[in-house]
Each structure stands twice: as structure tokens, then as C-alpha cells.
Length: 119
Image 1 (cartoon, rainbow, N blue to C red):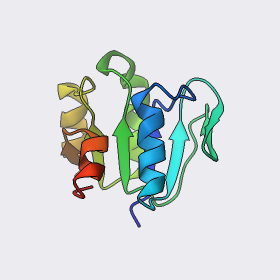
Image 2: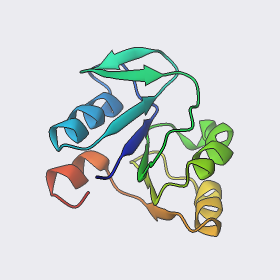
Image 3: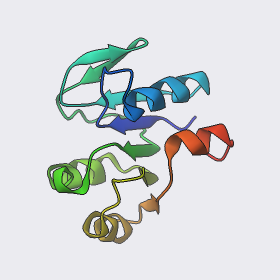
């Protein structure tokens, strides 16, 4: 199963990161969440410290490019197969780093991918 890290997770049900966690769970994906505020999304705790999660297949980004540099090394260290840049999160600099580390870059909306079954 494609274990996913939702980066920028929020306990606010109006946020797309919240909706992504819910949708991933509905589609039977294993989910971990990392954000700036602790909380819980339908049973998934939001971590506020960078943990070395095991077997991360995908990282889905819900933070803007200006806040991403502090996560570059961390995400690369998780060795995901891909990083999904949701609308408004694409970052040329980080894309180059990911590609250099043989990590697939996907510029799509996680929610749309799940809706159409191409996640």
C-alpha cells in the first residue's frame, strides 16, 4: 500500500490538507501527517516534529515554496518514491533536488488523483 505523508496537515476541516487525509483514509491508504499545529484528523494524529517515518511511498505537499526549504533534506531522507506538488506548492528548486535524488515529481492535486483513481 502507498503510505503517504501529508506535509502541512491541519486540524481545520476547511483546509485541503485535512480533506486529503480524509480522502486517503477513505481510499484505504496508510497516512501520517505533519503540520505546525498538533491535532487529529479522523484518528490520524498530526505530528509537529519531523519523524523518520518508515516506508513512505508518497509525500503530498500542502505548504508553499517559501516554507519548503527547511523540509528538503528531511523529505529526501525519507526516500519516498514520489513527491506530489498540489496546486500552489510547486517549487523549481526543490524539484531539481528531488530529481537529482531519483524521486518522482508529480504536479497534480491529490484530491483529484484520488477521485479519478490515478493515485
